[in-house]
Length: 127
Image 1 (cartoon, one colour):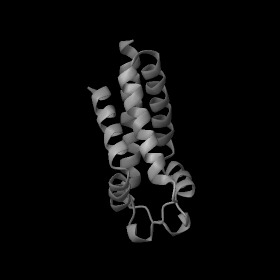
Image 2 (cartoon, helix red, strand yellow; image 1 turned 45 degrees about the vertical axis):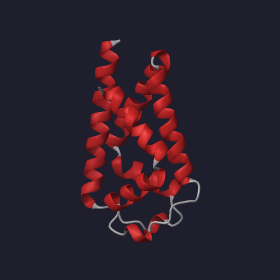
Image 3 (cartoon, one colour; image 1 turned 60 degrees about the vertical axis):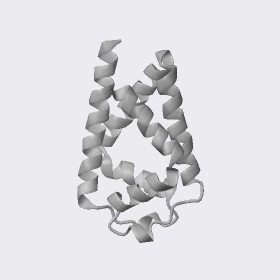
């Protein structure tokens, strides 16, 4: 089931990167109108989504590698959500210091990190 969800997420990212970005900004920032994403960000979202779909479809060792990567990133996000968001903001936005993260979003990102880590552990136990 998680593999299907990851593939569906990837498909959405591939087909609708601008909508995904707009939805993310509305949920993540107190000031979404001030968020000035770098011009390459929608293409990066599309490429990341396509990679998710490809790895989920391929399965095998490629999917196993992907699961390990997701678990590792999830652990980092769970422990350091503000640093993760700060790094991402500096990477993806023109004026990252102008971004104001919603307080609940930081907690949600931490929770997502925990879920991703648990997903990876569960998937690896099945191998």
